[in-house]
Amino acid sequence: QVQVVESGGGSVQTGGSLRLSCAASGNTSRRDCMGWFREYVGKEREGVATLDNGSQARYADSVKGRFTISRDNAKNTLYLQMNSLKPEDTAMYYCAVRSGVLCLPAPLTPSYYRYWGQGTQVTVSS
Image 1: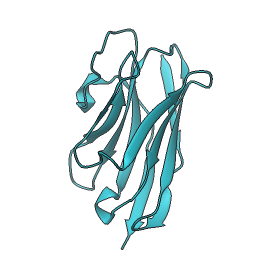
Image 2: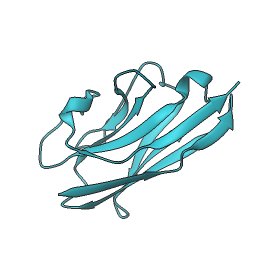
Image 3: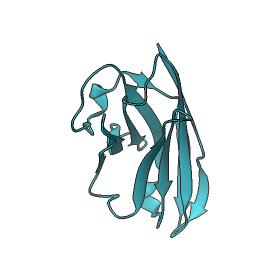
Image 4: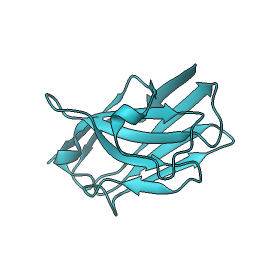
């Protein structure tokens, strides 16, 4: 089992920045496939950014150049640095883990991931 806990959401104005954190515990390793996803009200969850076993990042086109995903292996923590935020980034953000598999690259498809956190809300006002 893997436990996933997100933090760092909040409210900012357009152009602002936030950093989300995701602490993973339990049966995890530094080579787990991990990612950030978001869900708009009434819409399906979508991939934002992922890291594969080799820590190669993938990004959704909508966030390229603005968001950066990273991992601190010593702390078993995943981050999402979000800059130049836009109102359309307003959503519930989730962290997810898929452990024990080879994912090169790590898909942006939510159904690939097994363990999920409870989510953290990000609100960007204009």
